[in-house]
Image (cartoon, rainbow, N blue to C red; front, side, top):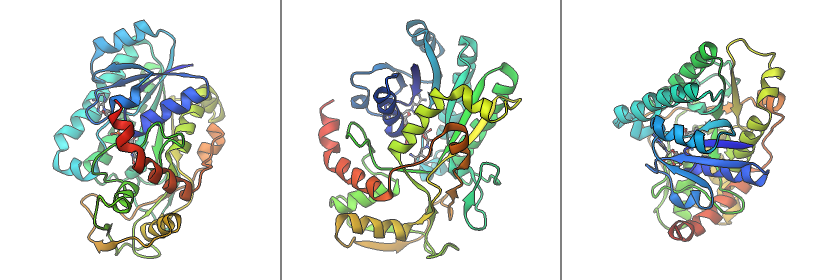
Length: 337
Ligand SMILES: NC(=O)c1ccc[n+]([C@@H]2O[C@H](COP(=O)([O-])OP(=O)(O)OC[C@H]3O[C@@H](n4cnc5c(N)ncnc54)[C@H](O)[C@@H]3O)[C@@H](O)[C@H]2O)c1
């Protein structure tokens, strides 16, 4: 199967490309490299450009008429930055995605998998969310994801397309074969920051937010190994039609699926797991929550199991140790470019 991945030079998109290749499929990458890395596209069909470039998409589909589905990962993703630069976020994530969906419709591409986010959920008592839990996106970034879900659903209902919105929880780790990983210089992702402390690039780890109503006051998340996440996309593409059959062929041609482990872990628990993996105490301090941060959630993963036949397999410790290994290799891999 050939699959177009927008944002395929990014952390998650490049890992999905590896997972597709490892199962005998062919990824085609479209990425503007606004944040992504050219090195992550090495050896792959790669088109450098923007998702709203309809002429480029026309060329991609002409050169790859056998593209079976599109996985739309391209986006700007930093929550605090989105509160400072809402224009850029709505422009890149919403306006350009809208154009992308229109172009895909015009090109007759009817299968779309969309990278959505657990950050659109409201905080609920007990913190566990199913796909029908109330939504309350609390940052411009999260609102872009929420809007795109609505747009995708309307496109599917009106234009005979089919879309699967995958709501990712908190990806950690790196490709276990170390082809790709988190590439940003100052990661806002929690594990990226933990690794930077371990590598001496940061003095100490700030626990951002300590008075939430969780078991220890720190934010609760569902940390999912990025390789498990990538495997879920392979399942979503391979079993695309079957997922709709299993869901009883919803009239609007649209599915929402949580991707997480089903286990809530607090920031302090993650730090403890990190110290267990490294065997050393970590320099840390408590600080206030960042703009847009919430207490968090973890997922009910039943829908993914029922519709995709997928569940997370890798442990949090494996995610931590792969992130550490990647942290040591990152500069070397990215310089080879
Ligand atoms: N990383 C997370 O914690 C997380 C959690 C939930 C959802 N997601 C979603 O997963 C997707 C991938 O995230 P990631 O962590 O890999 O981020 P990333 O920044 O590593 O990757 C995003 C990629 O999209 C590309 N891109 C951005 N705008 C583009 C445009 N207009 N045209 C072409 N390419 C463009 C960037 O160059 C980059 O390679 C995003 O949609 C994000 O919202 C991520």
